[in-house]
Length: 215
Image (cartoon, rainbow, N blue to C red; front, side, top):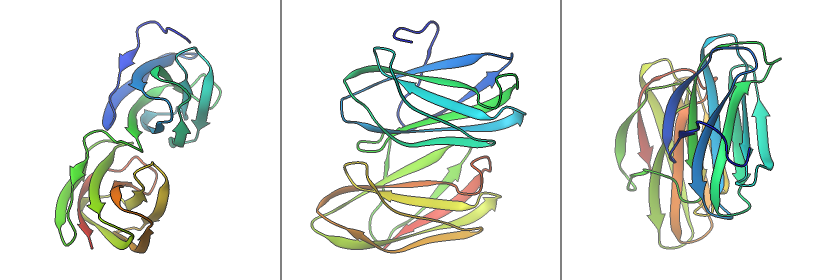
């Protein structure tokens, strides 16, 4: 656990495919982060019968966070205790005997990887291409403010889901809907950079294209 064999490197903002081929199997992923970082991990089944299960371990092999669910498992926010290389274990969280394909997504909430800048009054196109994927957008304000965000389905079968996070990685507002999701009047407490996550809000397995609007 403190120095796993044959891990796959994963970056913030990246979605990777994986497969649990045998009972008891657990797949290892590694990423580097700083003390105090807040990370989100999402694992969604794409085929088979496995229940996605995920755990995060410190560089010393101490378990920090874990979660499992029937279709999509999500560690909403895990605060990291020290600077170094962390490990994610992905596995069948039902009884350890089920197998199947999955996708794994990682993002840092307080300083996310590969965000797309969006301005007030702007509408941007986006695509959720894989199960578990969440797209990240960033915008800045000069003082306390109020924002609204709308995400609308264009093609596919995703249920639009959106969240707004502070620069420190704290979730401020969230909404989802079958064809359109709108966060109305989300209070932004101070100047700085804020982040939006756009995703499938149904069960994390659906894909499709969308537009996102910031006001």
